[in-house]
Image (tube, rainbow over all chains, first blue to last red; front, side, top):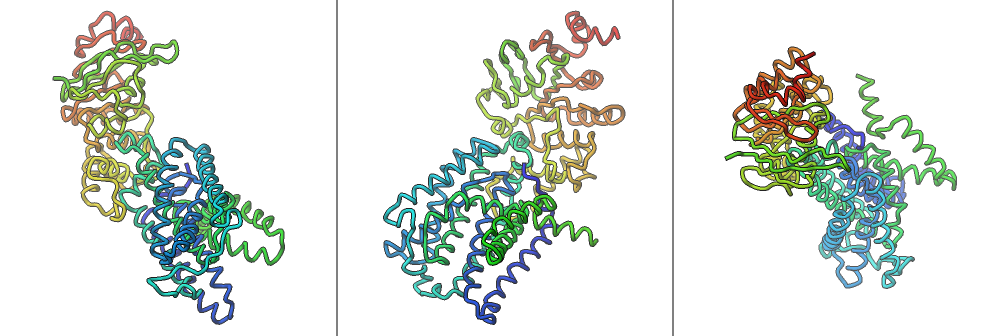
Length: 324
Length: 249
């Protein structure tokens, strides 16, 4: 079981405020980029937004459903390759790219989830890792799209026929809009009938069966929803990098997503978003300081896990309680 | 016709026969107690009736329908619910939520993704009603993990009641509670009697003889006698195997 609190109404609203604060900071980023005349800021911001979506989607099953998927980067890859594949046949619309990414991901998640959910705990982690690697090696062998090296995209996705996404700021705001929309959707899901069953299954699967709710269908549905959301992050990443490669779906990437969720605090959606922001900003800053930045990042992670096992949101809760 | 019919149930663990050709019937509204010394196989029997454990052979019929191959969740939806000897609740949910999710399980689809479940008045109203029957309505908004042991037992009962069972399997509902609390609990069970058929496993003999319409005595996985409380009290075999020890003490 993953140790998290069921979001009580009062606490959820505090988390909601934190999420709104993060969204407001994001919304102000293009202004800062314009003032400081730093065009890379927007690209970094878009990348963070994409990972925030992916981490939040992972938290939906990891935090609320106790399903630790170690293969979630596969869905980033499906999203990215959906853009490349449709582009190659002349379909350039963002909405169609997203629709295609979500469809492939739903099929893959339904099949691999149905098999993975026969296992529990560390076996679930291993089997999702194995499926993720299978997807990775599939795209490595896909020579039409550059195989191991990947392939550059001739252009970004179009938005209802316009080339608006070629502007970094527009792409950034579209990504922010998607994050906010998916956060709203995920928040609704965890507070719904379905969400209550999912959380109940995390708490005590035998009890859920004994009231007539066999966990499998609910867990699988959550797994599929999470995979589909993650693929939308992949569509954004491909557009941000204007490049797709199997590196998007390497198992390291799956591990980084888990780190983001745990760093932010599992089981409250906002934490995963915050975790993605902090992890990627630290990565950028530490990389400037030293080429051995991973070592410093490792130290930071150890300190966080030791002193704030419930992540950033857990630490903020403690500070809030201390003040009262 | 009997509502629950258990036919020639057998179960072995290795060389150990934990359930030996067990058959009994429970009529609608009847409370059928199963007593027996520790290790007689009572909880294993409940496990087979509820679908948690598969029997080696034999059949469980609910209202004439063979449910032996059905899962626990399917049996609950058909009206065969159980409570656990060791309290099994959702510790981080409130008391109300623990019961409301059981109400939700039998009323409408749980594949609803948008409407806030906490605001569903119909679920909460039903849950409050059930909590009142179990004597827990004043604790509705407390986290389930914060309840006392006795209150946990009440919540365990409330969750089972919330599924609206036609047959309720109660596995030692009084486990670990004593004195006045036990008396109040027995009164609550007595008030519920007749609304559904019940299979009761219980060590508290005062409770069993006060509540049961009929009693089956299970010894080493085998039913050695079935009858009314008076018949069981006066059965020579039962006295020798089980009750005798208590009266001699």
